[in-house]
Image (cartoon, rainbow, N blue to C red):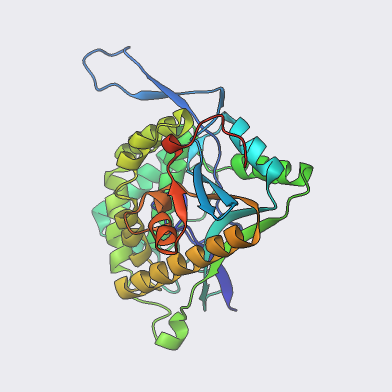
Length: 335
């Protein structure tokens, strides 16, 4: 049976296959450092509380305005996100855009699981022993991982490590956005891209799992590093520190490509084609919304906004004026 699977060229450098639900992002966080062990590297600690997240990008065409919130995940499970700027913008908007997702079509009843090869058989013995140890440490419950594709196992492991660290993917940000839209009778339009790709027609709906094995081994070697990086991104997002966020997310495109190409459905060429198609479609969707509405609000993964040749640069090429958050008065009212 053909399943629609979602790709998260979204909040993280993540290519996740979610057969039904789309990824969403939670709120912000402020970090402090622990000095309990002076001789060791300091760890950032996630602090709960209400945080505004980053300020908005402003895009204009004639007298029409589009406001963009850069989203991020994972973020702390106990955070409360509230942005007065977002509340004011949505109250004046004609349309809310998001969340963003790219949808592929794969000829598999369960795209996460292997047909005929167990994870134990796919991995070298030493890697499988390490997997079992880390699974016990980070993955709670009785999840059956015996026939997972290596890439799916890697994502499950990393998400488990994030959760142990208090970092999760939740619907809090989009729950808040949807609530504000409903309160103000503003329609919400999903930024969903149907990828122009069909692995079955290309004759490679399944490829070797070798790249997935390498990816899983790589994730196992850097789980703690990934956790620390995610904490730093979360802290910067909560504080609205866009300079740090830009630095911390600069490798997201490369990580996204590596993850995407580790699935047995896709080659590196496929990934490049899908990403190019997704960006052109996103630009078209956002540009059209700006031109048809007096005021529009959009929530888009922040690393897509930081690309040198990404959404914002393409909007500029379309003749639109793009204003960085530090160019916009933080208390400016919707025009």
